[in-house]
Length: 213
View 1 (tube, rainbow, N blue to C red):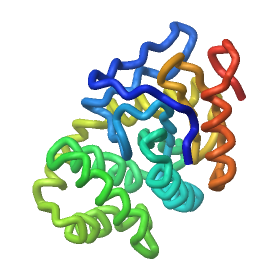
View 2: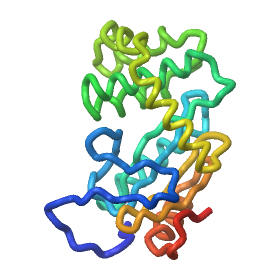
View 3: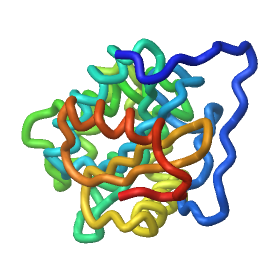
View 4: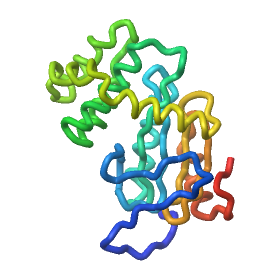
């Protein structure tokens, strides 16, 4: 898939965002990004481990990005639902800890393994995190120490606040970002491959509005 014809440059310029946009700038240094860092289009997924549709969309997004020839990347952000128990928040903290402690590949590996565990329930969060960490070749004891510190809880809450400001009411929330002109398209639900193609193309050709829905 080729969305636009672009001239490749050596230096990647970080996109700037208009004051009216509730989305914070995508950071290639601190964000969890799957795909080419300099892709002209980013798809931000606001996700929660209690959401079966997030699991479904994750697989579609991975395939879509892999087949985009570097034109699209996927940015993971959190949207823990308010009626969720502490267990799912622990899992959100777990993937943040894995990324900061062991790197981006470990973040995506642990995310995948947590989603793939059968009967993942919040009541057994620590057990599931330990199992997923082992499958991801991570030190589960170190990981649990980081999780219990709640070090990354403010970041998770920041993502949650951002999702609400975008008008999202459930998961998955999906935002298509044109990294050239900062335009966004906001959608909600488990979009299929055709939808991802449609809105990725639309945000490239979007008018001058700051936010489209």
